[in-house]
Each structure stands twice: as C-alpha cells, then as structure tokens.
Figure 1 (cartoon, rainbow, N blue to C red):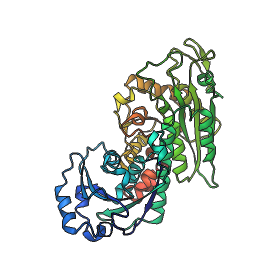
Figure 2 (cartoon, one colour):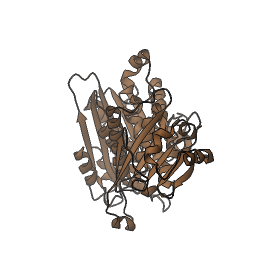
Figure 3 (tube, one colour):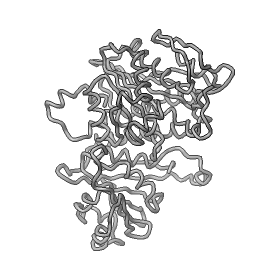
Amino acid sequence: MANVRLEFCASAGDSEPQNRPVLILGQLTNLQQVSWGQVKGKLQPVVTNELWQAALSSLNPNPTDSCPLYLNHATVAALPSRVSRHNSPSSSYFLTRLVRTCPHAVDFRCIVMVCERSDVFASACAIARAFPLFTRRSSSSRLSEKKHVTVEFVTVGQDNGPLEPSTLQCLTNAADGIRLAARIVDTPCSEMNTDDFLEEIKEVGRIYGVGKAAQNPPALAVLSYTPSGATQTIAWVGKGIVYDTGGLSIKGKTTMPGMKRDCGGAAAILGAFRATVKQDNLHAVFCLAENSVGPAATRPDDIHTLYSGKTVEINNTDAEGRLVLSDGVVYARKDLSADIILDMATLTGAQGISTGRYHAAVMTNSEQWEAACVRAGRSSGDLAHPLDRENAQSSCAGLFIASHLGFSWPGIWVHVDIASPVHSASEDPLLNSVSPLGVATARPPSEEQMERDCKRRRLV
C-alpha cells in the first residue's frame, strides 16, 4: 500500500462499487445508526437496502467482523463496540488491523468511516497507519500505478454534522506526519543513515561518543519555530539511533533484527513537528547516531563527559539512548531556554514489561502532565500509561536523563518510552500523544478546564 495517496473529505461523492470499490466500517452500534440514504449513493444499484440491512444483521464482531456486499467491490466491517478503560474508545488498533487485513483491502478506493465526532481524529490516524509509504517488496516494483483513496467520515451521535475544512486539514496534517514517521522507521539503515535523516529534517556535539564508530557521523539537528508573541518555549527531543548493534556490548542474533526502528523517537518528533499547529516557540531536537562497532567504538569502562558537565562511566554500550537524550534535553535547557521539554525514545526493552506492547511509558515531574498524556493517548489512539518509578530498568533510564536535566529544574519535563509500541503489531512509531492535534479534536472541554489546561494542550 506504499503507492497510496490518502485524501480526507467531507463527502466522497456517489459512485457505483464497480467503478470505485468501497469499504464501510465502524463500531456495530454506530453502523446501525446510519440511514440507507447516507450510504446508498456508494452502493447502488448492485446493493439494495434489504441486502445492506441483512449484512448488518449478520455482523458479529469478535473482536472484528466483515461481510462482503458485492464481490470484492463493496464490504461492510465492524469494530468492537466495547474496549477497556485503558484503551482508546475509537478501537483504533483494531481499525488499523481491519483496514490492512480486510479481504481485497488493496482494491478499495473509498473508505467510509462511521464514528462519533470525538473519535474522528483517532480513526483518521488509525487509517493512515494502514497505508505505510515504505516497501521494497519485489511485487511492488511492478505496481507503478498511484492509487487514490478517499476517506469520508459519517458522524453519529449528538454532534453528527459534516466535518469542517479546518478539521479535514488537521486530519491530513496528522496523517502525513504519521506516514512520514512510519516511513523513516521502516527504512533500513542502508537507506536511512544519519545523513539521510538529516536530509529528511532539512525538508520540513555531544552525541559523538555513541556514533563515532559509524561510517556516517552523528549529528544533533534542531528545527525551530519562533512566532512573535509567544509566551513559552517548548522543546521536543527525539532519540534517533538509525541502527543499534549494541556497540561492543553487541546484541544477539535474535535481538538485533528490527533495530532500524531505534530511531522511532526522532521519527515521531519529526512527524509531530510537521503535523502540529504551532502556537508558541517550538523546537525539535534530533539526536542522531548509529551505534556501530569499529576501531573507534566506545568501550565499556570508557568515561564520557556529557553536555551537562557530568561524567559517565560506560558499563554497557547498548545503553546508548540515555546518553544521547541527556545531551539533547540539556541542550534544550541551556541553549534553547525551554520551559517545557518532552523527550521521546525507544529506550528500554523493559518498557514492554512495565506498560505493555501498546502503551507508551510516561515519566514526568508533573502529575498534571502525566494525567494529560494518558488522556491524550486515549483520545488519539496512541496509548500511554504512567511508569512506576520502582520499575528498575525503564524508570532508571528515565531518571538518568532527568539527573542531567537537573531534578531541581523548575520547568516541565516529560519522558516517553515507546520501545514496544514501535515494534508492536502496527509497527508504527507513536506520534499523536505528542501532537497538539490529539486533544484539539477531543470532546470540547469546559471554559474553566480550557483555561486550566491551555498550556498543556499545546503540547499534549
């Protein structure tokens, strides 16, 4: 699906399924609220109202289900209507999987998503994940035709009107950012080394200790947006290890494959920076390196002086992420004068044990920000959960970064470990929980809450 152009629109228009194959999907309770008049223009004349109602009656999602309406040209599919309180109400993970695996998924040219307005953003992001941009499959080289897939939202519930142009643009920006981040993470290091990553950054000193053995030199790159009238400065810091062999503390043959995704934090930051609506000074800091093996590689027992001025004795060269992030957050504090610093990284394998495959681990010096991250994760579909500070490996790595920033630093610091979400079934980096779009399309808050959360919503 790498040759697909996604378009979000208020109305995809009418067309017979033979001319434009269509997939209609949503939670079963939402599908049952759709009138025949809302979908008949995309199904007639080959699908009748009776056939449509029969198909809805036959759906039994466990957790998902689909029913062909007319050959491989029209299909209706159902998502689970109930999820746990720790999951996204949109069932976004099931949605991505359903769009990818639905029979004849590659043939669909129109997707009609039926959901409540509060689930529109998460659903759009989930659909975007189903259409990755990177592929090197032999068969794909023969498929040069660029496919155009339109996505129309039919909203049900209280606020069930058509989507505004500004909302559609928001969805487009988020989808572009997600697909950009996924493409970077999916691309092997032979095509996405530090120099290639810098080229990606162009389109939109202290890391040397980790990357000095690699053929392509390490780099610290910064994207900045500084509008007039800004009242605060925000910095996003991403770990961008384009490949992680483990260094001289080398990984085994079963743990090294997939380490092209160790740049997921920086990829997510780049995608978020591209997608976000910037209201304050916003800086994106990319800590790029390749943790390789060679004559100049860092050795266990080496001592490095980091940008904070603190010395660090290396006992495991495969714990490189906390080194580059420490320099990144200190650079944001010293050189960018950031009031709010968020770092994101595929930092520890133990994160998957502490918060699971789909929930990013969040550590912060602010209880309010911790709660805001969890809420943003549920509303965007990119789930997050607080990290227990007694969980030795993951919390120790986060606290290592905080120690260089300074435990007495008065600003807001948020650490997000996305090691398992990057390698999960969706194989996409976490994006939305660091994007201001995640909350912007959630249920409208009260004026009191809006005033109280205004600063937090600019980042989360």
